Length: 279
Image (cartoon, rainbow, N blue to C red; front, top):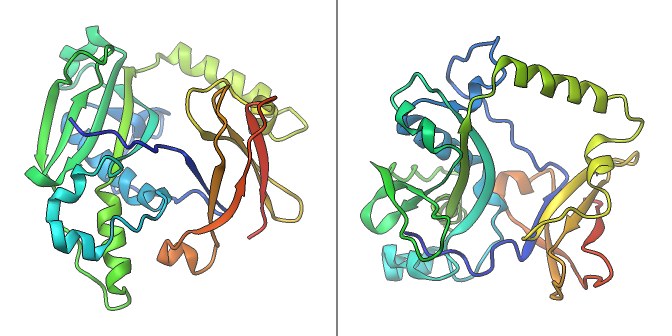
């Protein structure tokens, strides 16, 4: 089982463009709104994990501990550092109950974690125990993909930052039963109703701070001057400073070079702050 990062989400990463559009080379049923989130095998989970980490690793704050020199010195032991793994959570996938994993239907919802164990050259899929005293259960493992070739446009540091960054991603997922047509119709109706609001839906739903157990961005709104306002929520009782990293929407998205944009105190009278990204 991986050793959880001791500073998960103590830094918030934002940018003018936060989303990477991922085009999957798979055919999906245009009539099934859940097709791209439905899995029928562990191999499906592997494919989605690799795509997810390729689009998400650059959101991990840069660290002087995990660079080319360190890796070339200690090799795969670099992952023994308590801060190596970085968790991305709350992704929901749906189980195809007619597929090879249909035997799991009676165990849903099921919390899973997917990560790369560099020491054993494997991508591992495990359960997340309900009780910390319970051991994780290995469900599947695959030979980890080889490192990509360094391109002529990449510097040594950029190359190692990208390849090591991918292998720090820990993907937590919740496997659920696939919604029925009735469930889908209810969701569509709720979405249609929300679209009639005169203010942006995410900010309207979450303004004032969400009830959470970790630090995260709970709302994003594009302002009229093309700046981006972010609502950053934190658990009640959190008193540490927040470091906010940003990346510009030009060359920054190509080099994934993050910069410290602000350090701010949190207010104990609320559980959120609003920050405007002007880059």
